[in-house]
Length: 267
Image (cartoon, rainbow, N blue to C red; front, side, top):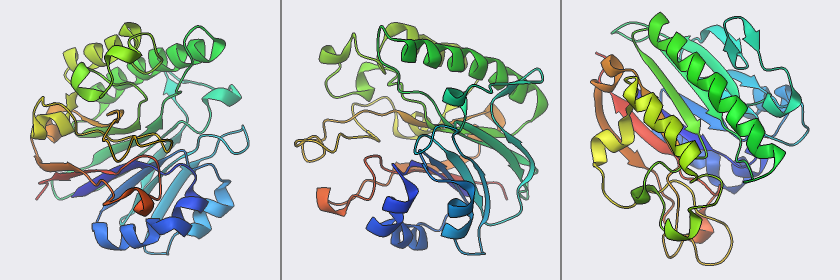
């Protein structure tokens, strides 16, 4: 099973710039999208009938939005980050979490597409991010208890270690690399969640997934690794390959992120 995660930076623009051609060639079974930034009717109509689509739009027009695309039926869909029956209903937290189950020969796989707030240090936007991360931590614990095979993926907007950001010294006080944010990833990994990408490529510098559209960041590979596929141990043990599907050149980019492609041997 090939599972892909990508922040599309606006699905309508991405499809016009080359996302369609990429989808035709990636041979994915499941694709999770973040920052879709479109209403339900647009997202549903954007993809061929060969894809089953589940989407949570943001109540803030033109913001956020997450989706799961699957070649097979998606069941038991949950829209929004629910913890112990409560769902974040504030507009800022919408369009950031959708989960569903897909079937595999090895059994059901619970798939989550999430888009965590980017945050701005010292502002209410950072408070929103920490509130979401707290609820996400609680939901991760629930998912691990409820399902054997879970993969939570998306743009988490946190670089975990110095190897995950080119200019780490210059970003020690910037949102996305604050110690308090990075501690959430420490907590998740300590609880058993596996960073499948790092599991395959090892703890080497680079393997970034986002580069600014400004300046020469892409050409100089001055990026951040902020997109993840976090799996439960049983599912992580089935990983056979992981790669960042980085575009060949700046002018070939259809998003400011690159897809994270992970293969799972599920029979």
